[in-house]
Amino acid sequence: MSGKDFNPLSSLIHCYISLEKEILKRVGDISNEFCLKCQTTCCDEKICRESIESIFLSSLIKLQNIQYDKKNGWMSPYGCRLDYGRPLVCYEFFCEQVLVNNNFKALNIQQTVKEFTSIGNRVYGKTHLICVDNLSLISPKKIIKINNQIIKLMENLAKQTVAPLI
Image (cartoon, rainbow, N blue to C red; front, side, top):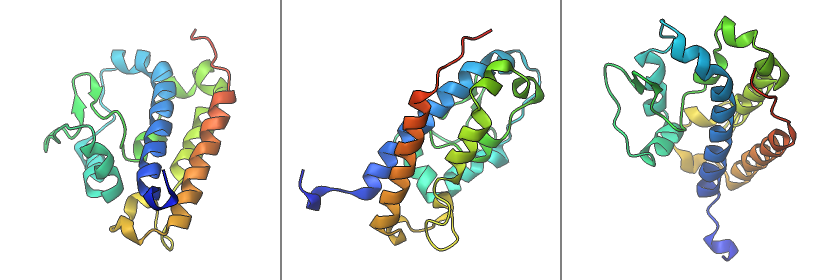
């Protein structure tokens, strides 16, 4: 592939999806047992809406070929239907049962989430990646910088030993 054929935005989307899937897997490995037993719903359609209002997140969701439900958002009886492209707030909330879990603490999930949600900060002026209305305004240099941040976080995650589930 020549340098002319390289599309930084396409590369960013691919890298972002890979990172988000890895984070979702790690969070899910710990939280699923609690969430499946839980009788309350911590998600709401208003939260889901950010994913369809964000140009970047909606471009990720289009790849999944699923329809948004105006009443339930992405929620189903089994949890969120999105494999990636979730609003960042979805990664910032953890119930008390998850927060005190030893595996959750050992894997330092909150620090990983903090690094993940900060990727894309100030991508266009003071605007975060998921809030940019026109992705073509983002310079290739900024996109490459974000890709490098994603790659670095993926490398750090690969070095972490996954604690056995207790």
